[in-house]
Structures are given as structure tokens and as C-alpha cells.
Image (cartoon, rainbow, N blue to C red; front, side):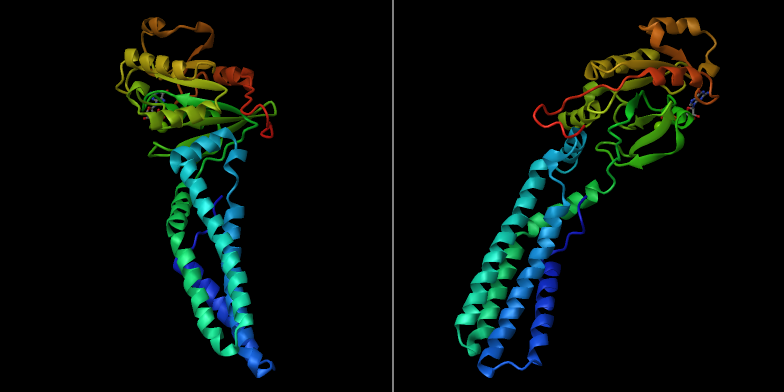
Amino acid sequence: MIPTIPTPDELLDKGFSRGKKQADLLRSQKIPKHLKGKRIEERRVVTSCQVIKDKLKSIIDAVPEIESLHPFYQDYIDITVGVDDMKQALGGLNWAYGIITQLEKEYGAKIRKNPSEKATAIQKQAYGRIASVVGKIKKDLDFLDFAKQNLRNMPTIDFEATTIVIAGFPNVGKSTLLRQITEAEPQVANYPFTTKGIQIGHTEMHWKHIQIIDTPGLLDRPILEMNDIEMNAIVALEHLADAILFIFDASETCGFHLDNQYNLLKQIEKIFSDVPVIYLFNKMDLVEDAEYLNQYIDDEENSIFISAIEGEGIDKINKKINRIKKIERNFDEEDDEYY
Ligand SMILES: Nc1nc2c(ncn2[C@@H]2O[C@H](COP(=O)(O)OP(=O)(O)O)[C@@H](O)[C@H]2O)c(=O)[nH]1
Ligand SMILES: [Mg+2]
């Protein structure tokens, strides 16, 4: 998404050394003496400018237009590094590109107009100004490098797939279940405010691609305690979720009382208000009295007793998953190119 970002010194070194190489090629050529010095220095300045410009342009072109990305990625970038800062950094590179284009013309003409004896001095002036322009975008290059590092392991989301987001307190069995209902090892990607990384598992069901997302550190703790930025990380998930799998640990061996688990569920339902929820009561292998659970069941139709570890109830989950409808979202009325 973001290519390797050079430091200002690396950018200048690259430009100046290529300029020198190209200029040196002219030294052995037969050029009238009074023109030779001018030609060499003009070539040096123009080549240096072009090499630096090419590099800037390749960076600008490689970074996708943020507005053209899916809202999930726009939010993701905004939460992770800041969209405004990103735009400002790219603006800085554009600015430098424009100024160096001007310098290339200005100093090329100046060298041509003046006698050869002055060419070297003019070239030095040009290099001084180029170095100053590149120095001014140091903060922009630094930012883009920071953004590159932070966006390196973005989750790869299939926006066509039906997407299920898993929620529930730590140790209720989310990872165990994800392994049970998906094929292969889940993809692990970075996600803001998750230390272990978001986990994305995939499965096919009747030619329908299903992706299941677990967000340790995010949808496994009281949402009321979260700050605005953390909330944004959840809102980003809202762009994706076609259903929520909420997992209760019916045995309470995870250390959380069912009352608390139920409260978390209610918070999550409030945030994902338009998203259907499937309620899973896990670790039933450890539960002797299931009667006790009735008080936590609001929607019997969509509640399933399971044992993720023993694979008990997985077929019922799959049946439910198979019936999940993809939520049609119209993110941008004027421009529906996401679909
Ligand atoms: N007895 C029993 N243990 C389970 C079940 N599902 C998960 N566990 C155990 O609960 C612990 C936490 O599971 P994990 O999947 O890591 O929970 P997560 O933190 O929600 O991802 C692990 O030791 C699992 O082996 C289950 O159905 N029955
Ligand atoms: Mg886990």
C-alpha cells in the first residue's frame, strides 16, 4: 500500500549520484570547449531533479486515494495513522515535486544562458535549493514511513463475503470456536487497540464465502469503558458485520459471571443495532444444570448450546450461518463503485 520511503538524505544521494553519473558520461564526448562545462552541469542538475521527482511520484502514485477505499479501510487508516495527516504528508510530496520541477527549468535555463565558467557555481546553487526543498519534506517522509510500518499488516477483508464478527469475554472459547468452524489457520492482522491482532477465518458454505473475525482486546471487554478512539475501532467493524456470534461461557470457568457476560452482550447489541446476533452458550460439557441459563436467553430461536472443544453443536451453528443474509450497505450515494 505504501512503498519504501527514503529519508531526505537517501533521496538526495540518489538524485545527486545519478546526476553525477550522467554528467560524467559527457566528459569523454567531443563537445566545443565553451559549451562543454555548461552541458555537463545542465545534465547534472536536470538528471538529479528528474530522479528525485520520479521517486516522489512513484510514492504519490503508489498510495491509493483514500476516498476510493472501502469505508472500513478509510476508518482503519484514520484510527491507525490519521487520514488528515496522511493527506498532509502526500500534499508535502506533491509540493516538493512542483518546486523541483520549477528548479529544474530555472537552473537549466540559467546554466545555458551563462558562460561555462559559471556553470559549476550555478549547479551548486541549484543543489543547495534542491536540498532545502527535500529537507522541508522530512516530516512528511517520516510520517509516510511511520504509516507504512503501521499499515503493513492491515487485515485483508473480502467485502463480497458474508462477514461474522465474534464477541464475548476472554476465555469463553472464541478462538476454539473460530478454529472449529473455519478451514485453515486464521489470518492474523493488526488492528487498532488489539494487542494480539485481529483473527480472520474463512469457510465456504454452499458456494458462499464466509469470513469470521475475532477481535481480542476489543469486543471482549465492557464497551462502556472505552474511549472515543476505541469506539471508532468498533465502528469500523460495523461496516463489515452481517452477523454477530456472541459467545457465553455457560460454565463461567472463564471467570466472568453470566450477569456480566449478559451485560456485555447488551452493550454490543446496542452498538451493532442493525446486525442480527446468534447466541452461543459454550462449554456445555461442563454445565450440569442448564435450567439456570434460561434467564439469559432472550431469543430462543437464535440461541444454541455448544461445546466448542468437543465440536458439539457446530452443525447447528453452520445451519444458522448458512442463513445469514449479507447486509446491503450504501456507503456513498453518488459513487457506488465499491460494489
Ligand atoms: N470444557 C471446555 N473448555 C473449553 C471449551 N471451549 C473452549 N474451552 C477452553 O477455554 C479456554 C479459553 O478458550 P479460547 O478459545 O482461547 O477462548 P477466547 O479467549 O475466548 O478465545 C481454553 O482453555 C479452551 O480449551 C468448551 O467447549 N469446553
Ligand atoms: Mg482468543
